[in-house]
Length: 172
Image (tube, rainbow, N blue to C red; front, side, top):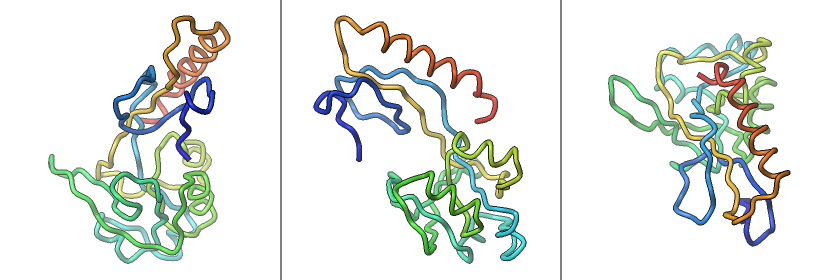
């Protein structure tokens, strides 16, 4: 669930989304590029999509927290943005579960690159449709406004920001 930091007494959270107006302080960490991935085994079994509409014949792993709806994947082509309605047997509100399903050959995933960059490096996943731009979402660290931010919270915020900056090249 979406944590209410103030009501639940949480010091901070990392959010990937366009943020609604709130009383929270938000520090942009990076722009998260989303990509289409599948395991080499899945692609060997079912073929590699060459254009977005080819996804209509594939088992797509859908994320139920998607702003556009779990089965609408966004693409940009020739300066035009459009959504493609896909389908599949697995849907989850947890991106890590969808990542696992993709790695184990259960379908094609539309996921933030920051979640799967290690799988790409190790060859467990392959990026498909890389010629097509997908959406980008900002990643923020958010925390409640406080006149006196505790030092441990400030140090942790700085650590997280530095950690994301050091890995930024993997997410492009």
